[in-house]
Image (cartoon, rainbow, N blue to C red; front, side, top):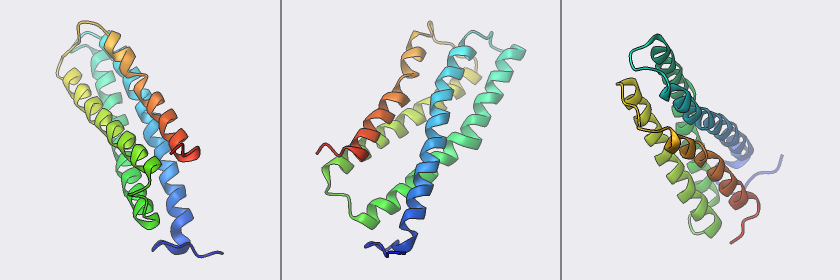
Length: 150
């Protein structure tokens, strides 16, 4: 096996694989959660259906999305430091996009807690728009990593 240049050495492909695996878990959850909110929006606060959606959303956040995001950041930062990517433009754009996606994650966690407390937006239109953000971010990140346009 060839030794990699950075401090990760032969562990580099394993760390990269772990990074990609947890990106998939995180993104799968971020694709699901806004859709859950759209369905939850129709449930009357305090109803059995409302309580079921609250529990589904809580489990998705606490078992899949948040742990996966933490591991994405951990493995991603290891890779960035290992390869000294901080001055590389495509990586800077990817980092900014992942940072914004993490902000979206924070919004989703907060919104889920508000819905659990009985809040309902006047319309689910904004939720339908928010449902598109993870897909757009995924496309941008994949293009930046694979094509490296700059």
